[in-house]
Each structure stands twice: as structure tokens, then as C-alpha cells.
Amino acid sequence: MKKTKQMVTDIIFIFLGASIYSFGLVTFNMPNQLAEGGITGITLIIYNLFGLNPAYTTLLLNIPLILIGLRIFGFKALIYTLIGTFSLSFNILFWQQMNISVSVEHDLLIAALLAGLIGGIGSGLIYRVGGTTGGTDIIARILEKNFGLTIGRSLLMLDIVVLLLSLSYLSLKQMMYTLIAVFVFSIVVDFVQEASYSAKGILVISDKNELIAACIMEELERGVTYLKSEGAYSHAERNIIFCVATHPEINRIKEMAHEIDKSAFVSILTVNEVIGEGFSKETIKHNKAKKKKEQA
Image 1 (cartoon, rainbow, N blue to C red):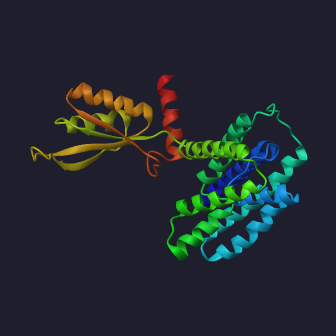
Image 2: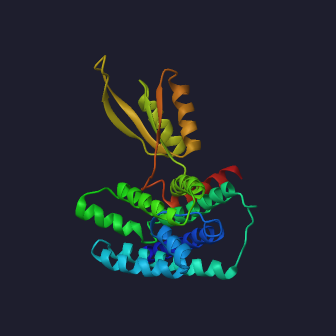
Image 3: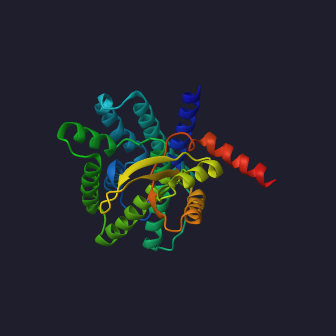
């Protein structure tokens, strides 16, 4: 039941992300002749050279690739890819029928920024739940399996090829603005993917580590791990406190450490993802409800 509920939620996010991405594509990329990477970029080349609607060419190009990649995908990845592909095609057609026009007064810079921003939000939502819209993701996985190329490197190479091919209908000026859109897109995608929660890691080195650890566990109800360490100069052995917490909690831990030991060494670490007790959606909701009760 829980898995089914999560899958339904993921599918909603994939459809929503495809809708947002398609809106940016139809409203900013296509009217201003801004290119795209991947399969979407190829559909734009076909559209500008032959007039074929990207809503249809998206399916025509992706379905064969999905069939080729059947052996690579697991069941869940296959379902998510099919849903992402059909959602993208449907939403491109939907926004074309809606015929919404957003005037940027022929300013390609604004168009590029908005294309990158909206496209990044849409794709970020899709990637955040493990979804994909097919395309070059499939080719990249095939290259990884058969030739040992990393997915990141493969995607970069494929995008470069598609962007170079886009010069068949773009001017150099439009290509430069496209690169701005691609740059903004990549930043926004990363931000959306990592913004599901706010978490940091913290390392505390102190002679009073047991007291600091006890305060963290009692006041913040966060788990603490001791990491065994040895000083390179003194060769003295000691425990290092490691804890993952939210941003407000990290600030409180820093205060605790220096209140207990003014000479404590504190280091803050970037955490890209946390899976486990204390960071599930249910736990976050419970903690928020608990804080509201305490404040009441």
C-alpha cells in the first residue's frame, strides 16, 4: 500500500514536471528559436527545418529508444520513462492548443533566462522522483553498458552534438543565448533536486565530546555517531562527533559545542541526500507538529 501511494505521488510529480517543462519549451524556446539538448533538441531541429510538431516527433524518437533500452530498465524505471515520455508529448500539444503568449519584447536574454528557469524546475521535479522523459538518457545508459562511458560524460557529448546540429537553423547569436538557457537550466535542476529538505552534516572535535553528544541527543533528539580518530602530530586518539541535522539545528549544535567547549573544532559538511530515520516525510511532519504544540 505504501509503495503504491509513493508510486502515485511520483507519477503526479512526473506529469507536473513534464507540464512545466513543456510550457517553457512552447512559450519561450520555440517562439524565440532557442535550441535544447538531447532528444528535445532534435525535435526542435526537425520542427524548424521540416515543420513537424515536437509533440509527435517526441514520441516517434523516444518509443524506439525505449524498446532498445528494455533490457537496461527495471520495471519501475520503464514505467516512469513511459509516463514521462507520454506526459511530455501530451503537454507540448496541450500548451500549443492553449496558445498562451508571453511577450519578452524581443529580448533574447530574458527569453533564455525564463526558458532555463522553467525548464529546470520541470525537469528537476521529474528527476527528483527518479523519473525521466527518455531520450538521450537511454542512449547514455546504452553507451555506459557497452562502452564503459559514464552517463554524465555521455549526456554532455550528446548534448554538444545536438547543439552543434542546431546551428543548421540557428544564428551564432541565438546559440549563445541557448547556452545561457542551458547553464541556468543545469543550476535550477540541481537546486530543485536538492531542495526537498534542508540538511547539513557536522563534525565536532572536542575533549568534551561526550557532554556535547548528550546535549545533541537530549535537546534536538538527533542521533550522533562517534568516528575514531588519531591526531597526526600528537598521535592522541579521540572520538569525533558526526551528526546530520537541519540548518536551524546545525546552528544550535554549533552554539552548544562552543558553550560547552570554547576550543571545540567544528566543521560543516554539504549533504546532498539523506535517507533514513529522522529525515522521512513522516518524521518531518511529526517534528513540525511537536514544535507547534510546544509553542502553543
